[in-house]
Amino acid sequence: MENFLHTFHFLRPQWLLTLPMLWGLVWWLARRRRHNQDWSRLIDVELLPLLRLDKSGSTGMRPWPWLALAWTLATIALAGPSWQRIHTAAYRTPASWVFVLDLSPSMAATDLVPDRITRARYALDDMLGAAHDARVGLIVFGDESYTVTPLTEDAATVRALLSPLAPDIMPTTGDQLAPAIDQAAKLLEQVSAKDRRIVVLTDGFDDPAAAMSAVTALRAHGITLSVVGVGTSSGAPLRDKNGHFAQDAHGQTQLAQLDTGKLRQLANSGGGQYVDIAHLPSLITDLQTSQQDEHGVISAQGIEVSHWRDEGIWLLPILLLLAATLTRKGWL
Image 1 (cartoon, one colour):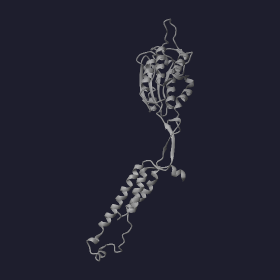
Image 2: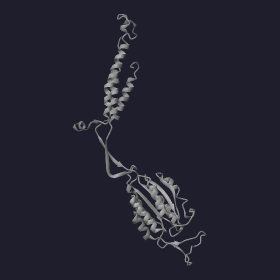
Image 3: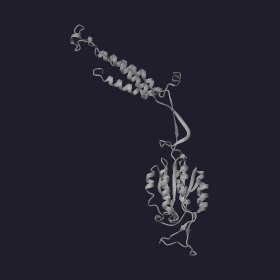
Image 4: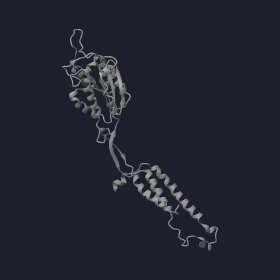
């Protein structure tokens, strides 16, 4: 009881200022009603009992005390009585991830079954499935980069667009990663999320100097870049547009080999991690460091906020009963 008296207060005490006015209004209504029914000023006192329909002369129960009680309880409820604090997790904005998919000709290599681009789409599907409340976007690149979807919370829509993505849909051939990184950074700069990440799915790129420079700029804006290597170090023969094995200037068959060293260096520069397709679950775990609780709401780890709980809601059942009572015929 001592703790209750110590913590009890009103969240909106200004409502209590209306109580004197409401009580005054009830008194005025009761007095006005009584004067309106005082026929003794117009009819002889000895004749008045004979003219009343209610021969018993009983005035019955008056509603004014109950009306005053109802208005008082309603005012107290609006004032917000409170005596208990509620502790909840502190919320923050959801994570934002942009996936950058390589659609250069080498992604058609078959050293992964059935081919690299299909396995990359499978990997994207797994990461999108783990996104939950995170906002996701998708960019593809070859000689140029293109935004497939801007940042959205509808991961299902992004997943539905994965199927037609293949190297043969690109208008020109090439493997320029830097423009795609810059384009992903522009998408992330439009949101205020603290957890902003770029995930590149590629088997290599032709502009290492420009790509490293673009990644260095990301770190200055608090954006992390990770890399998923798609392919094998042994590689597979490249095919030209006619389906034949592509050859270099010396007539040798061109192999699409995965340069893990260059990709790992790119991830290290971006502050993220490098994984190959086989170790994708470790990257998914890292992406989920935004920590979802069991209700699917993203919250800051170890940080709680507290607020006083409004207990005025418990007065509503009593107010409903009083309102039903005041509707009694003949009271008002």
